[in-house]
Length: 406
Image (cartoon, rainbow, N blue to C red; front, side):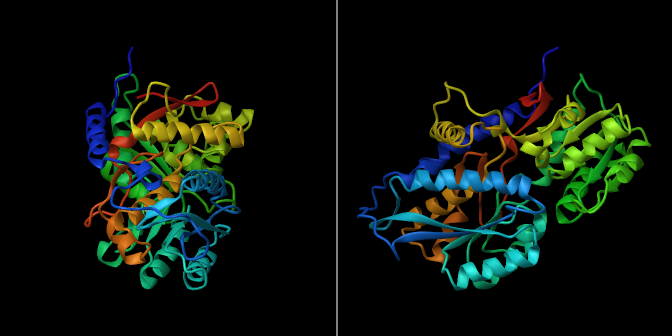
């Protein structure tokens, strides 16, 4: 039986988005007829960006991958520099490891702004670290692009005028999951939900309740990452015997829950993950691969990589990024490189605004319609995130790899 393509009509809109974007992200490192770029020099002729990432501790499964993507993209941009006004500026990245601690992320954001004089900030893989950085960035009026997923990162908009996020919105992910369970090949009527502790999980569970309604017959919040075993929460949901269990949690929790359900509790139903599961950790080790075999995940379509026939500027950018990533790290496992898109968005805003002034970068970020490495973005004065719904696809674990399903 052929697999219906969820959101096929939406992909047409994605193409329109790309066409409307014109020069896309590549303009950030290409020519601009309104500029006359001069030679690059040191010091003040840099675009300075601060990044506070979870390189250790909770969130590191994704934080390390985002740092890799960020370094590759910065090197790419600096091959020619970013045309800003009459200069070509080098991107100077200042990296900090917040260890998954919100208070550390806030302190680092303050130091990056006040001591390093950054023009923009990015980071916060975890919702909690991002939310602490939001407070600092908004108070100091410095553009901040969050790499986390929670609705209140960019809402209420009146209190988030300098804040943006890139991860898909929870409502869009939940709707894609509803569409998946409605497919003829699955016919899933009842679901259970295991969701992460904190703002990230609460956002996801709220979206799922609105999308699935009374089809959710059991739900449990997971313990904090690494604090205790996930078996108790997993058992409480599995005992209700839902046809599918949705795991809304980031790696390594996603893999731990799969192990508990499939190996420890012999749960025979379908597993469905949100994008947070897609990290190296989830498919590391034979026991985890066996536990997640045939599980589904809703994730940006960039997980499928790119083909040799892709010809748009965004496709070529994506192909070049994947090639560089494989050269440096040996394999590309398809995670969504939000940090790569974040630095390109900031560079493009500076180019279009012909300035590294924080206020001008904010204004031009607010009106960017672009397609990046991870997916498409449509920022507006009334909308500061996240990725467009038509950037999403459904993947299934087959042969120890994420393979596109719809």
